[in-house]
Image 1: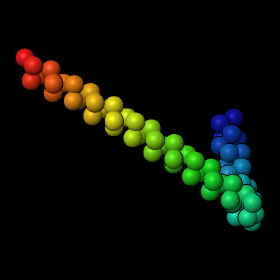
Image 2: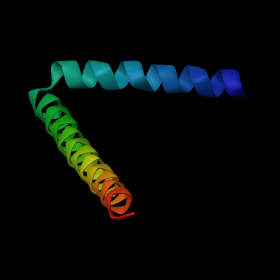
Image 3: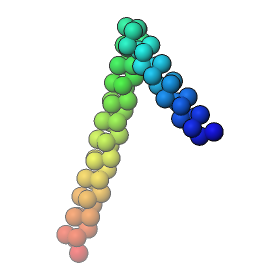
Length: 66
C-alpha cells in the first residue's frame, strides 16, 4: 500500500513538473506562489527576531536594575 502511494506521489510530481515546464501560465503561477511563501517566511523571521531582541532587552534591563 505504501509503495503504491509513493509511486503515485512520484508520478504526480513528474506530471506536475511536465505541465509546469510546458505552460507559461502555470510556470508564472508557481513563481508567484513561491514569492508569496518567501515573503511570508521573511516576515515571520523578522517578527521572531524582533521578539527575541525585545525579550533580550528586557532581561538586560532587569539585570541592571538589580
